[in-house]
Image (tube, rainbow, N blue to C red):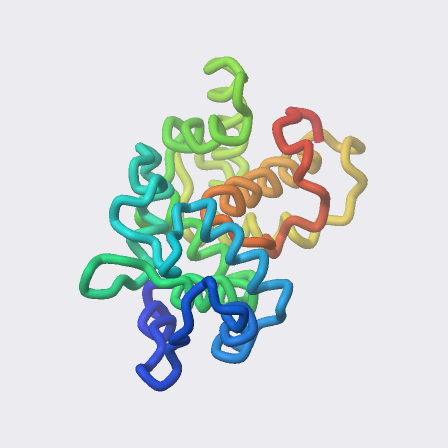
Length: 224
């Protein structure tokens, strides 16, 4: 996203000038960002959940910035801000539209970067990531799942995985067609990566995740 982030900021002529209270708020963003009405509506609702205000911006004091989640802060750091350190809804929406259109490989690379700023991801770090997905699960179970998954992503490396490992794993996971549960390793691969994308969806509040072809309503269930 970093390479493309500058394109998220509209020119003065392209900037939506009306305020959220104006009936044209949604329609003007549909035209400006080349997005569907339902996309704009859903993204606007998520933007409000993040702490967006009546002026259509996410101010520095928005509740989302009080989070201690390192993963979330890395996402926010990638989104361009204006001089007063606010994120406009139009910039946020442009980022959402870009993410939806990006290729699976680009999505995977971005997700890997967000895990640890592009550095190697080891079992301890991945266990912390999984803790967002499996709330209420014991630390021992999280570490076991992280250990198995890191080894699988790392193609046999038990210590950590890099970007190439992660991207290959992600693309393979997306193409798997075996029935869940018929093979525990296949089930684990499909389940783990699908749930990892639910984490992405939850934190960044995108209305859609590319890989999530199945319902995410039961993502806390440890079974596939």
